Length: 248
Ligand code: ADP
Image (cartoon, rainbow, N blue to C red):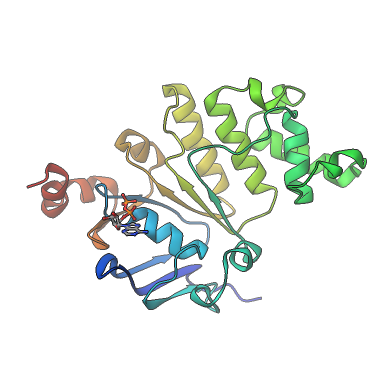
């Protein structure tokens, strides 16, 4: 299968709520194995953009093309997830009473049901994948512990591991470092950079210290469109960006 130049292409996307444009002719292109940070003041349209990509919200206008061929605007949420788009919300949805490795096993088996997956023995291949996921999300030493005993930051990583179990081509994450310690924040930046070696990642983030640590191209949204795009230093020095952040 040929690799297309852009993994995700939003073209002229508009979302109206009772005439109010949460997204206003938004265009954005994301490459394969690119990590992009999305910033912008409250109400800029960041969440709505993620909702459009995942099929939660249908745009009134525009196209969202994945891998150059799938028009996401004609697919439902399950079909979009199936194509390889995973989304991590701020609140982790791990199974607190189960061990870290069982949480990952459940994610691998794609079960959200009554834990029947845990009753069947896992295969060697599944064990190897769990080992690799544990390494990746820095939880190898904690594999037998219950998820409920993890720190806030570790829980976030476990959930990222559970999403990675589904081998997404694109991972959408909403403020992954919120509520984390400085060390956890730095580790999360490392973790996401590591993931972006083989997948694409979109990070919605308010914390500019964290965005700086990510060290990736930044898109600043405002009133549903792109206000500025580029390296963080250039975007944060942009006069229009300064104006909207200072609320002038
Ligand atoms: P951000 O995530 O950047 O803070 P949002 O995408 O959540 O911005 O919201 C963009 C704008 O759209 C906001 O003004 C918000 O009030 C409005 N909005 C979002 N969702 C809805 C909805 N379901 N109904 C009406 N207005 C909405």
